[in-house]
Image (tube, rainbow, N blue to C red; front, side, top):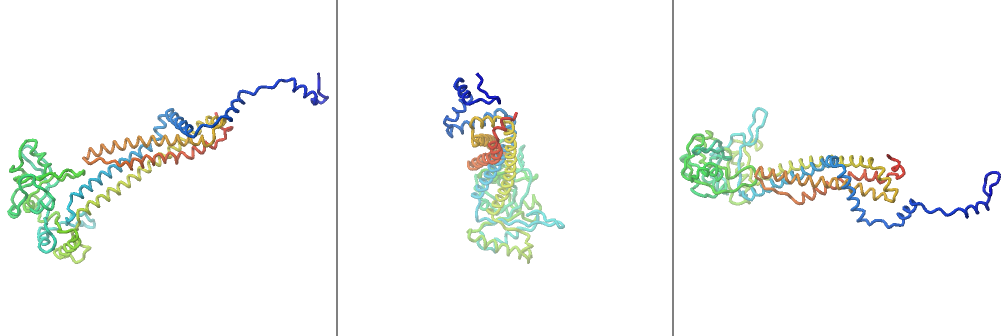
Length: 454
């Protein structure tokens, strides 16, 4: 039966009968899934977090080489920070140990810098100190308990078929035993008679004994050694001080009388330096001022700016060295920070590429109910995992490198847990900071536009 009018429009009765005749169409399976998804309780935050970590690890494993290259800047930066901090702390520990072994009441007088034309040479290059200066200080400056001029020499020490070049070969006064804080293991130190008679005698340290006499199984006491073909009799062996963790070995020394060094080795009337002890630390400043005035008088210097000598205490010398090490460490940490910055830019770049490659995946996730926060957290966690793994690898490589360096130069290996935590935290923060923009960009994608992306 036709219930349409001439214009093809169905009348009300016909429409009603047709609706009654046609059976109800069941809800499609797609509708069921959408309805079920809307009625389903959302996953707990903890489950979502672990799922995001799992997805991040899967994405990293799927692109191993790209992930490694992306993390390379983080690895280098963190490794460099760990190595620099470890080496700096090792050197600081060595300096602190050296400071603990030094006498705080000791002063050292060194020659000033020589001038060649308009060029000033290094400190100590000028020949301005003499034995008479040390004798005058001993006689005229109060509170000085002991003093010794020092003549630095160099040359090989030979015994039979063995030879050795000690780090320190010095001519000193008998009082240097107290000045240097030495103890005798066997024999005796240089005597006043040796100094006055310019006797060819020598006192040697344990390192020299180890390299010259131990291989031959001979007791060094009373043996004759040659220095620049000048025969010297070993009259004493110093007790070991032990390495301070630096390149300088305090036991690698040979001491001879100051007068003997001048006449037979250096051929110079000048002293390399003058060392002295003050009776009390409270008198250091007064003694230093008195020595400065006396030397200015002896050297005919009217203007203090023209002094041809400098006066330092041992703590100042080591503190200056420590300041240089800290400044160098700060510079190297700055360079490492730049590497971390470059690594962060690399992470941002690769995450932006990842967002572009996975646009359709993002659209599907958002179409089936994922929120913008879910998408953003997944990409943020992926950037965090990428940088954190790079930080862990950098910490491992940096620690191994610092250990190898410490074993090579004989210094103590020191690794601060705080430095490790800060390096890891900084690397993780780099990942979060530089991964935020790509994650935000992914979260703002329109799911309809994203689904159309091929």
